[in-house]
Amino acid sequence: MARADQLKALLRAYAGNEETQFYSVALQMAADEAQRGHTKLAGELRDLVDAAKARTTRSVGPRSVPIAQPRGELAELLNVQYPQQHLSQMVVSQDVSNKLKRVLNEQRQHARLSGHGLSPRRKLLLVGPPGTGKTLTASVLAAELRLPLFVARFDSLITKFMGESASKLRLVFEALKTTRGVYLFDEFDSLGLQRGSQHDVAEMRRTLNMFLQLIEQDTSESIIVAATNHGASLDGALFRRFDDVVIYGTPDHEMAVLLLKNSLAAMADIDLDYQALATVADGLSQADVVRAAQDAMKDAVLQHRDTVAFDDVITHLGERKASTSLT
Image (tube, rainbow, N blue to C red; front, side, top):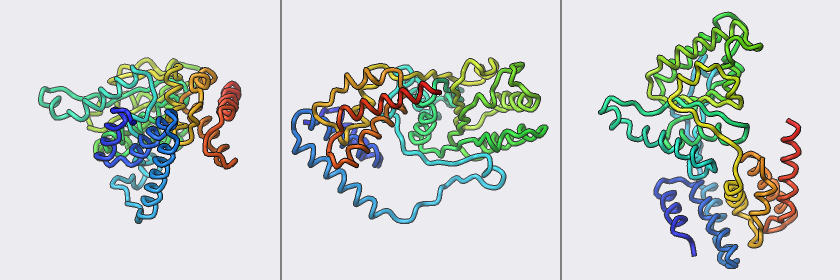
């Protein structure tokens, strides 16, 4: 039978109208039943989920217009999204999870903190290798707090003309005040390089100085998230401007097992050896593990199989390792 934590997660997702999470938990329950040898029950659960998804797809009307949409020059500087991912779907270290839970808790109890002259964490610097969950974190924060996610477009923000980049950056920070949301500055090292480094140029230096001033002066209620793959290359002055620095890393063995179980839940064979798969996945990022699992499921679907083959997952994990070694 389903575990107590699964039933609670299912009810929370239903009560919170979190459709994606509801289906994800239901499929995990089906996978657990399959592993216990209850193949008929597992199949019935999967059929019920498929039928529910089909009904939802048919009933969806015209897509709603976003409540916050950048206009004018801002439309060239910010992309807006309305994510639906949740913290329970992330597989990260306990330290990262605890820090994100603290941010969410402080944000949700903003009024209580304000009553004591305190402010919630809202300026975060995320550091770690590609594919470890930094960009996903911004989506999760937006979804959990029911805020729009604004992604800064550095291709439009950074220009070669004197003063123009700083002017555009100032415009973005004005938007933080007028529209509360999560503002993501991804690949932040393109802006925050150490002053005086070999890649430092006058315009970038002016832009970085402007960013340092703007983030220090910012008193809005928006959340600022800067993400970088190269923390060591950032200017040291940046770290002091953030409320918290969150360090990401590739998954350990147990995290890889959980990632594989979650990713393969819909088509997992009862005899699938997750421990062996996690050993092969060692060194891969969370994103690479998930993509390998998805590729294995595609193979199964195209070959008209109901379950994923162990060898297929091994093959795709190996391919991911080979491709990452080239970068």
